[in-house]
Amino acid sequence: MAELVYESGLSVVNMTSIVQSSINSLSLKDRKKSIECNLYLGTPSSIFYNDIITLSRSSELDDTHLVSKFLDKYSDQIIQTGSPLEFLARIAKNVVVVDFLDGEIVRRGATSPRYRGHAVKIFNSCCRLAVNTNIGQTSEQRLAILIYDIIYLSNQSQELIRLISYLVTEFAKGHFLDVEACYRELQSCFNSGGG
Image 1: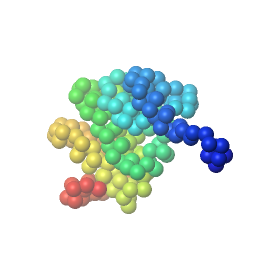
Image 2: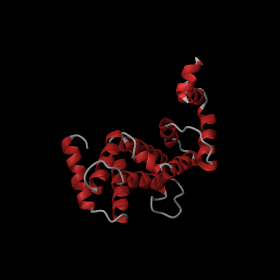
Image 3: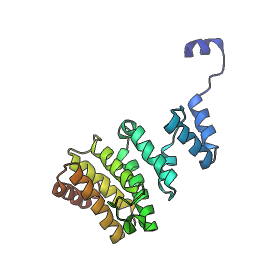
Image 4: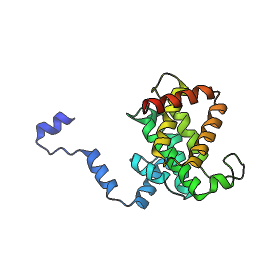
């Protein structure tokens, strides 16, 4: 088809760049509508990782629900990208920090059935996806690299690090990972300056 167009002397347009330019010209509110149509209706529209990261910084339940839905729907594509752990770490850090700063995750308790935030669900989804990547040799090592990246991106607040430690320990136990091995791998990340 491309050869036919070339031979006919017609101009060729890069549709991907046109679509990206069009979407980038929209406000976040309008791009959010496009994201909703994609996630809920299956409408083929582009979703940019930066928009998901931006939504993960929101304290609005609808925004974090979209992040959660995106992680569920596009999990296979996420773990096949060039740097999935960096993307997942940014999302996990954002949702935990927002709920931490709001006091929601501490006040209600991350494991309390009355806790209605999506932070723990999204954190666990990020951990689950990290464990399924091809980075590192073991599930514990992949999880440790993710947690190292989350802590590295955080402001090093001791309370926040304790909360992250609690969340990752609960995740590891719930997924039959060796918690001690996770912490050994995390220490190794700190000793080497990364994964």
